[in-house]
Length: 215
Ligand code: AP5
Ligand code: MG
Image (cartoon, rainbow, N blue to C red; front, side, top):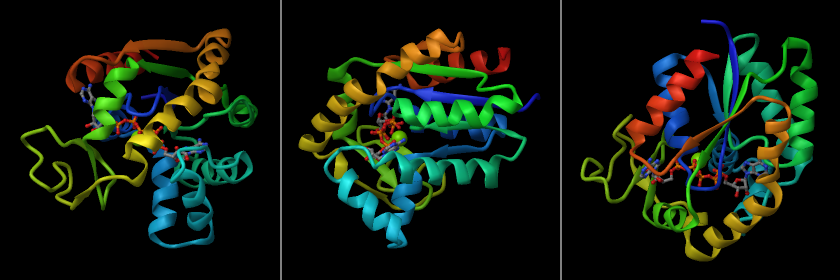
């Protein structure tokens, strides 16, 4: 398969993390979630982790300079020339501009896929989400297969601090103000695809796989 550079766009709770893990496992594309990288720094109590915690707990974005450096380092280190799947980055015009410029030489981003989900559904999903302590795979607390441990690696599940109701509202608001404009950014660039996210994980996954395989 030709190396692909794909962005998953969408509001908090749209299913970016769920689908990125499935696609990466199935297609062998390296993936990164900027939120997962920050949570990993927090767990290791690094300086970046302490800084990120002060923003993430409030549901607001971590400053661009820190985020851009962290994700671009990951791309250089982990993706090389092999393509990648980005989940949760870019989230601002400055992040998108930096990524566009960095990828120009290698032909640019191939696709930005926007997963659409209504606000009511986002709030419901986030309020009962549980995340794996080890691999960060998200699970629905309503899923009968989830009995306190990760269905992917067996790790212990926990509730994210920013899935409490006040932070969820704030995250959705921040998404509308700062990240939603990127849908137009990628539409204008001619690489936007849209997927209806309010269907089963399997149905959404099938559409995403088809879009990526067609690239
Ligand atoms: P991040 O970790 O990226 O959180 P987010 O964008 O708020 O997205 P979520 O992880 O909440 O949602 P998701 O789309 O991954 O949904 P999921 O698959 O889990 O960011 C956290 C914070 O880090 C930010 O607020 C910010 O502070 C900071 N940050 C991160 N990136 C940054 C950046 N670039 N710049 C600045 N700051 C940054 O699914 C949600 C739930 O729904 C799960 O329970 C899942 O099981 C369930 N579900 C998934 N799909 C379906 C389906 N089809 N049907 C039913 N349920 C489903
Ligand atoms: Mg996520």
